[in-house]
Length: 452
Image (cartoon, rainbow, N blue to C red):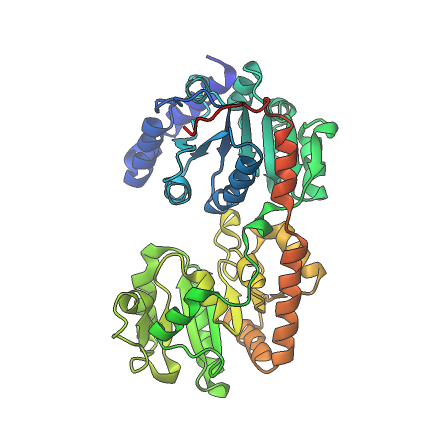
């Protein structure tokens, strides 16, 4: 048993009184020990395979284009997609559950024996880690088996960088074992070098987040959605607030109440980020006195039109999955949630690229840390509006003022939308650059007619 195995075991033991007594923590720990110890089924084919590990839903979405372009260049390749979280697992099944060339596994806890079991079972020709999921035993095991490790869409925040520098005697080795880092921007590249990655193994390829967005001005599904919930784009103005988190809906509804004073007939669409909050947000809307139209109630019953339910002041609740982009396409102004309230560093920001790709004027709050490199591009082009409250101004007031300014100026809305769309267009292509780098680490292509 190595140093890190002992450290992990000690940490598990020391924290046992906490997670054994707290049911939610106990379920999480036991679930991880059950599912992430490398006991899954091994890969059955002899084809070369790439193992791609992604943690968040956003990272998994970015793997879709990566897998597609790799497969186009190397039809003989098979893929092993690993995740850690429940939401990540569910998203991986949505993306790859029907693809016979893709196997789905749980990423192993970083105990040396669990890692070895996974590598022996999956036999990857290369490993791709999305953004930053670097672990000492995993990188050591890959090095022992001469499996190259490529960090794609590499990102190292200032906080993580400081922590790794403090722990450099323990962490520099795992960074030095990376075969290549494809960094999102130069500041991240520099941090990886200082963290221990040899300089000649680091290159800047841009962020893959832009590549998941589809540039368009119209979406076919949007017309049906608008009709079903009683929205009339073009003849009434519509605000869409997407991926909102707790407390943000209250702020949005406060701003909406003030906006209605000068913009009668203004429509509001709220789309909470988490499905488990749909009922909670519905109750909040109703408590403010608004008639509510729930997309889930009318989606499968076209006769249940919302046109008579809410009138001009009705609030629409987007309580379905996979329709946020269509709602964005109906908007005159978009506010992107998880940016106005501080939910913790790991929860700073939701995807503002999607509405930007649709040419919409986008408003965000100050908490966008998970999209730092993306926001840098939008800021440089003057293609997004950032709002921030202070001791004299409430979040609802600054949001109201930002929306009111855009509603009063169609020219400004059009300008922002065009600039935002151009930023997306100009920054696409990082996935292809990552693929070009990855291909250099793969074995020669097999000549085979097998599709399995």
